[in-house]
Length: 174
Image 1 (cartoon, rainbow, N blue to C red):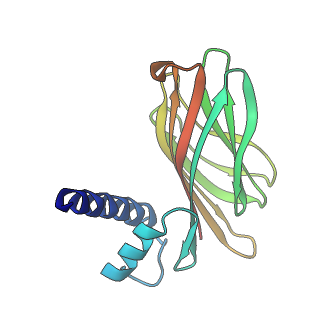
Image 2: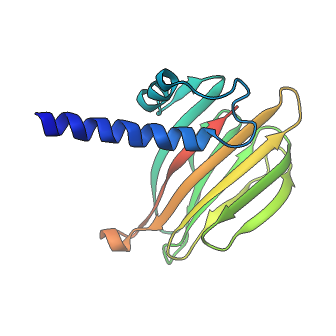
């Protein structure tokens, strides 16, 4: 029983650390530093939550090969889409309901960039032949001002015994 409580506590603090790291981007929290109570609140509400005006969602999705722009979900102003080509290469794509005035993205698949994106336009924010880990941030200066952040992990799944692509990560919107 004691080891189970210790393991649960370790997992809670690991999730809290990930949540704090996700939220610690410049300008993400105008209210200042988080208290221990707020960190614990983030850890227990990390899925589909709202804390300090920041909404956070976790996504998990699998797409069959030869899938194009299958909607993973809409998270505030951003819609994530899964593409899995015929050889099982995953590509995470996104569109926003408002004009994105400034966007930065980077990933292990060699994608780096800085761009503006028209409302409704769909762009690739991450891809990789053997999977990818990355981050994309978009800021809209329209009213209301919106800041979205996507941290993702993409993987082809033959290593997992399936011919599919796997997509997971977090979306934060402020």
